[in-house]
Length: 313
Image 1 (cartoon, rainbow, N blue to C red):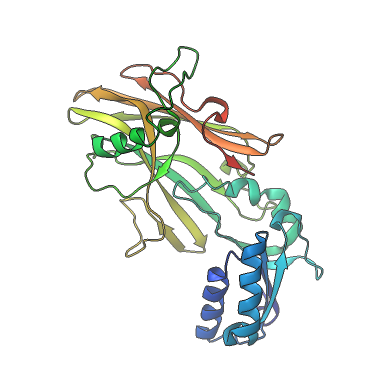
Image 2: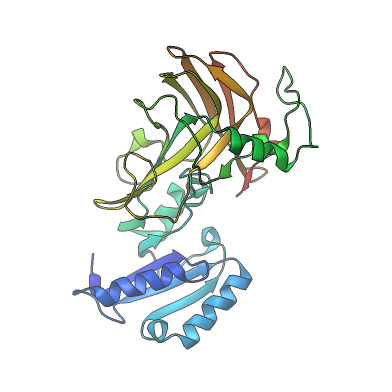
């Protein structure tokens, strides 16, 4: 890659990612102002106003070539042809829960990147483990205690919308009944160049399913699953909120919590099995998760058809 004539696009938000890239250039011994042309693409018009103000008034922006573009990244095509780098910040606490795979599709990357182009992040994997946390579960239930409905073929009494909705949380008073196993892998997405051979990585977006089993090491009451992610940014550079591999001092993401509609009592020696589906409907432009417990008892599927929670695409 020619470092003296790079062109990069980034999902800009209100400019934090752009400024981080500009700081990286200022610290580089092989790059200087003007070597990289940045396209800061953002579809939120309010955020675009902030970006344009920064481009006009901040010295570090004016010292580089930063073009602010008001557009959905998926609909934008650079007038100068394919780019060297795509940088995005679509990662959520569960890795793919902000629809990054549906935005950074193989078709999009093949259209916008050069053959040797780079996508940052390169890929990510979600993880989860069962958790006992009565205070958190009670707090979530109390948010909409008056909203009751039935879910699934067998019905799910006394369950409200919040108990079929993932939450980003800070957990202090919690217990993990399967510490030896810890968090297990759920879904992996890879954003290498689509003409590279990674057919086993399932990089195309679509429905996915995973069944996870956890040996119970202590009597407990499971209130939900706590989720994390590990991410490969570029080369050997990684970041993680998985407790076993957590990036030191990183507080940009907190774990996600997928609650159970009703707590499950488990005994030492039993196996707790939990199923999760990642659903995508391109007609309605929605992505959502469905989940249920199948051991030591069988419970109805929660959030069927994204009836309570979904992410718009």
